Length: 117
Image 1 (cartoon, helix red, strand yellow):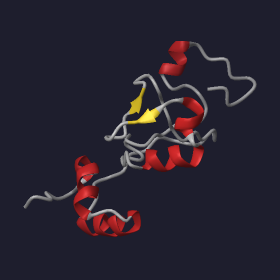
Image 2: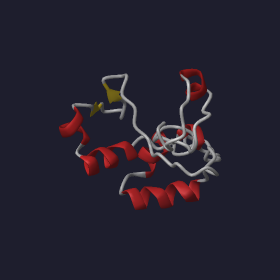
Image 3: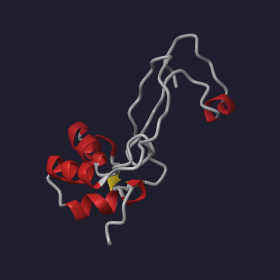
Image 4: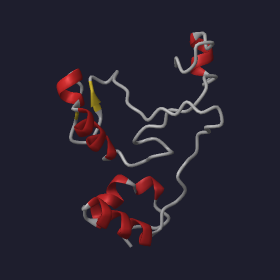
C-alpha cells in the first residue's frame, strides 16, 4: 500500500492484507451505504479528474475502478456495521435528506427488521 518506507510486500502479501492499516470503502461491511460514494466523488471532482463515473446504482465505471478511505495506523482493524434498527434508519434518513424507503433500500442487508411488514 505504500504506507511506510520499509514496507515491501509481494502481491500475495497484499492480497492477504498484510499491509499496515485498513481501506474500508462505501458499500462494504464497515460503511455499507453506497450513496456515500457520490459525496466523495463530488468533493474530489473525481469524474472530472479521473474519467471514472458512478452509475445510477453507485457502481464505478470502468468496473476495475476502486475507491476507499485509507487509514495507515498500525492498530487499525476492519469492522462491520451490525444490524440497524428502524429508529436508526429514521434518524439517518433525516440526516441524509432522503426518504426512509430509499435508505431501507440501500441498507436492506443491514436491517434488523422487515421494512415490508
